[in-house]
Image (tube, rainbow, N blue to C red; front, top):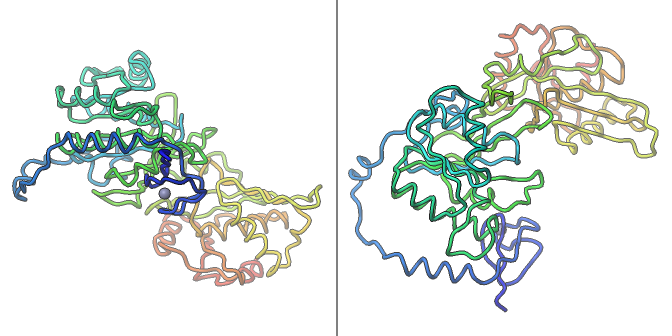
Length: 433
Ligand SMILES: [Zn+2]
């Protein structure tokens, strides 16, 4: 048969459909794309002459200009080296999370000729956003509303801007591919054309890619392998907090996080995330525990809240917000076994305030202490903070950046710092209480 399937995750093509991708082993990522991708590939291959000449290293060095900072501190922190000529950057995130806002702010701040492709919005909508964000002169921003990749390439080559922003990859298409915009093969073909132009013209390009919570829209995963740098903008739409994480970075570090808050005036940089996260906190309240967590290489203070109540249903609930729910199950089991905490008939709710999500094990101890505190209806001593991973035996294990966390806790003036070196086992903390 002629039907071809393509994996949303790795971009490999298959003649047969299967539930799990044979190449990257992801589940439910194979999508029917038809047999035209092969044709369009063959066409573009024959159209392009082979190049056999080798460019001397010196020439490459002189040709590629210098990296430049974006002037947005939190963005530069994640990029490490600023924007590199010819570099292709993907900004991924859920629709409406603030990708376009961030890039519009970048376009305003850069104050250098650039091309902003708005394929989802018309020029008027983007202009309105620009005017909402600044009163400055923004004539350096060239807006182009098109869904044609060929138009984007033409505009790039004739305008020769310092930067091209494509918002978004899901809404553009190339003539060589008959599928609709947003299909995996379309995304792959458009991205390779953009990347090729970026490399040839030495102009950096930022590509916006939407993902859903389930990661079901084709694109960002497929693109990760093709672009130089992948930044992920995350956040909870009900909260102001936005985190920009580096996932892949050919030019700099991948463990940095930029921290912003979404306001009416756009994304505002947060210099002191701990202060922001603890706004409005009730002190000395049972069920509330402070944790020193790491976001990239930055230590910050987060409030973990737990609420433990008698359950009205046969199988009590374990509901987590901001932490992995499997992790919560496990911590409840550890507390039941090693501290004989009566959680078997109780609902346990755990939440990190401020809309923060923490995926590192250093938050375990805080979750455990918050649950204990709620069960016993007893607050932790004033001026206390904690960090540590919980082992299955109730032991408190050391975590990454331990020294850095300890230093930060002392700097912030906390008197009681529960951590793996002072409290190697949960039982030790409870005895002391
Ligand atoms: Zn795959």
